[in-house]
Image 1 (cartoon, rainbow, N blue to C red):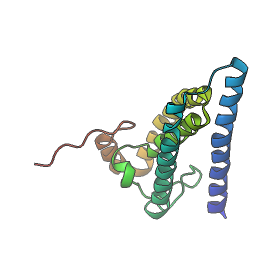
Image 2 (cartoon, rainbow, N blue to C red):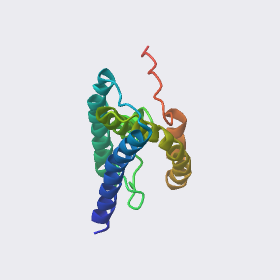
Image 3 (cartoon, rainbow, N blue to C red):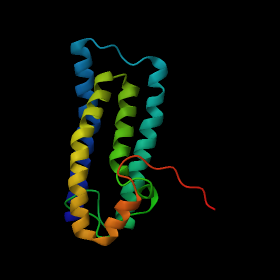
Image 4 (cartoon, rainbow, N blue to C red):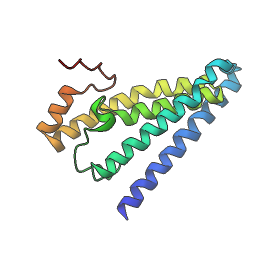
Length: 162
């Protein structure tokens, strides 16, 4: 039952993000008479949306299969997940949400919705810094080693094999 509740809470979060941000952005655009993104820019939207949603699905599947938990902090993974997109960045869920929401904003033509996503990056970053302390407490040296080798946000280019 707790797992169902955790996934239900995640569904509510999705509804709030993926309906609320576009609605707020389009409302602000209308009030301020901000014109929509030009057509060529809007074509990038579906690509970013699909990439972001695919990234979320991949991360969620890893949390269930490898981590034996959910992406909801109330039922977090019991094992440290360091495979898949977690090999390149410590926060692929946040980056996937950002990609999907920017994509949706572009698709809908809302400049303000895209700006809201960018502004939300600040509290997300603060939350991730706090979450890292929690992960260090839960997983100890395993997380500290992971943290030392994988960047928080921007993936590093791979070194060529010699």
